[in-house]
Length: 324
Image 1 (cartoon, rainbow, N blue to C red):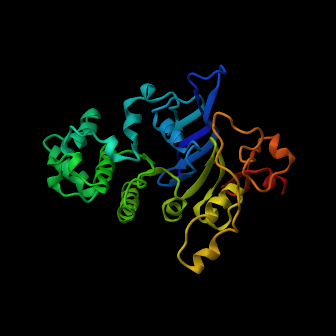
Image 2: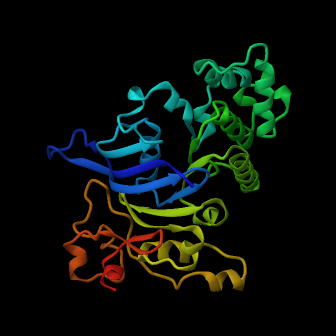
Image 3: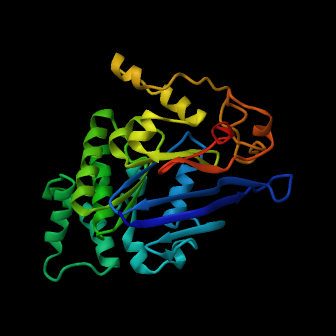
């Protein structure tokens, strides 16, 4: 598979307004590397405050990068959406977490789906209605929904509409920011299956942001774990679930609820951490996980570990593994 998105040394820092200390910054993203290949899904997982949504917003261009590179199909796009050419904006789309706030309540479904087609001059002559019906059909909504407004749609239907809007421009990549977290469990599976079907049909690449590791087993090609603005571990999905190496990854996987003894046997041994994720304004010196890790040693409090490759495509940032 060819690379479509390449991120190198990406940082996004926000100044803390009203702070007594000058130059105090929130290090939401603090130097991360990853790539996404054509037709694959990279799952980016982490707790609230880890920086995963900031990563999504920086990749899509809502935030300009503080430092580092974002290259899409070989072109530098790290300067934010205002500096991106129209064809790049067309080729990278996003589905937000809450469709209720990302859809204009004053516009009908027809108007919502027509807007990206109009902006990117993609309306077929004499065939606009047919295009809109095709988009609705792709997300399993009937034609009569063209006349509805977001207020009359259920949560799942709103997200289906948001997905239809995202694929309207025939993009190469879609950033999915927790697209199922605000939905009922009964609807989540339908949305996931729909996204997988659309991906196969259109050869789409996904950056899938979530805090739910259980989604990644069937959704992701590769999984990256984020903690306090940095990537702790990244690996192919099958390797990730069978051989997690970072203590934080093991902690997250051991906490996944299971319903059978067979599933319980596949989980790593429980890793007990302490406390909560620290503030990104005051990141611990050394390894940022040292305040919660049960395996710390002296250098964990002094040196930030380097990301190393332990086996093909399996990378980890941990002094414990580096020593081995």
